[in-house]
Image (cartoon, rainbow, N blue to C red):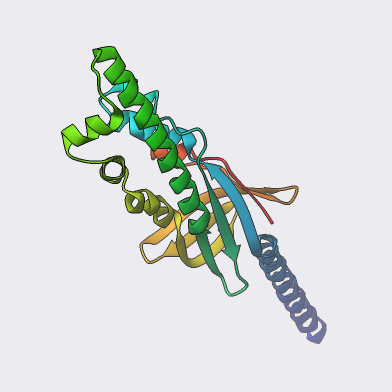
Length: 214
């Protein structure tokens, strides 16, 4: 009788030990997934097509688009995962601002050529300065009205967020002040790829996959 009780006790201890081992193993897997993400990741996304598409949608004059096409526009993003389960996603606003200044200057040249060609097509004896004198503005005013830099910079704000994260089964659960969002991801060869799986917004879909490197 005592031997049977002893065997039962030993079996119970063995079962408890096995359960503890399994729980520790599962906990270890979860930590490994999180640990692989910890650190600072960077990527550059190309917004050129998105901006040109937005301009095409906003301008009625298709001919003018030929003079105002953006050749290259990118955004540098930094994604940081911390040990305390916090994360941050930020854009390099200084670099973006500099690019916008370059684009606006390019647009000034494009608009000048557009007005010159328009005047030539009409066969009118007039300079670009004469044209602006007639419409009661100058090039800088026109650019400010057509392309609000602060409005364009809001794209950087839209990309930024911070809060807490959880990594589970190839899915990132990112929680900020607006709630929890899901990002499917892959980790391969030292690269973190946000796949965009499940993203429904057509404009945002064009930005995926986003490939980050440490």
